[in-house]
Amino acid sequence: MKKRKKTVALIFGCMLLLSTIFLSACSLPKPPGENSSYDKVFRIGYQKNGPLLILKELGTLEERLKPLGYKVEWYEFQAGPALLEALNAGSIDFGRSGDSPPIFAQASDSTLQYVAAGKSKFEGSGILVKNDSSIKTLADLKGKKIGFAKGSSSHYLLVKALEKAGLNYSDIEPAYLSPGDARIAFEKKEIDAWVIWDPFTADTQLQADATLLVNGKGLTSDRDFFLASSDFLQENEEIIKVVMKEIQKSCQWANEHPEDLTKMLSSILGIDEASMNMAVERRVYGVEEISASIIKEQQEIADTFYNLQLIPKKIKVNENVYTIDLKDEEQ
Figure 1 (cartoon, rainbow, N blue to C red):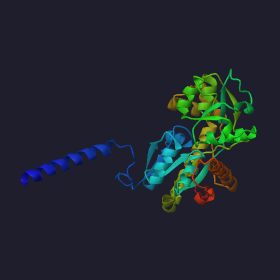
Figure 2 (figure 1 turned 180 degrees about the horizontal axis):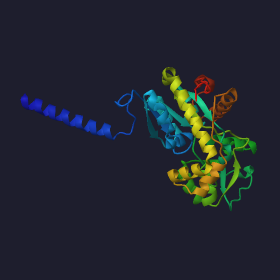
Figure 3 (figure 1 turned 90 degrees about the vertical axis):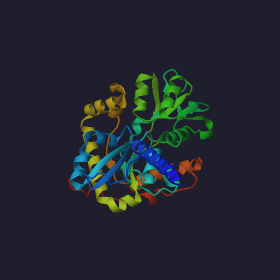
Figure 4 (figure 1 turned 45 degrees about the vertical axis):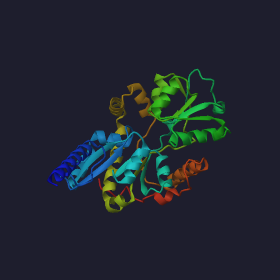
């Protein structure tokens, strides 16, 4: 019996050790409150582009939240859907996404709430073709193989571009590809066109002999959205206001320091400065409250994806909007 107890104890000890090693190596955020130097932890999900990356690099949010007892933790995600999944699971508290992932999340019964919107960035999003391509107009896309990320802002842009040309979605051959895979396929001419956003658009224009057939003007606003869980917002609205104010300040810095911003993003993203400069010059950074017109924009995207059978049910975007006055927070 003693031998058996020793064996069980040994097995349990090994399991405990393995669990400790696993948890130590795990990249998922830890629950708030585990750092003894701070009362609370504010966990942000970001991607390697956009306002939150700029805020992270400037380091101003840490300075602003420290007196309030918050430590800021940053978690990088490769794409919006994964970020929103973590947000919905409670692994992070706040994040930024493009316009389409929140629609898919809501269609899956997520309780995530829109907090604020970014400025339109349609100029840097569009349809790329090779310089020697026979595609000269949108009508020429008929029968062509077009690469884009399924369910992304590019997907919506393509649908609207086809509509403008009098074409149906069934008139083209879709190739669902991540930006990295699409870039390779585009350069090898395995796809005839690529629908993408900056800085990929700019870098491909300058480095891969590409022409921007059309940008998002008149087709889509292509906004960023800042989101948080409903439960977190109900208990931490004032902190969200502070965070949004710091995001606004970082956006103002970005608009006033384009050269510094270009160098910063070029270094972080590993993109040529000329390409990054093109992307910076055609974007205005900023934050807006979720207005009726912005809700209408999102609803049109949601309805389009439902009609294409990309989401399982109709949704009402306004049901997931958390009204917050961004002008109340003091300077």
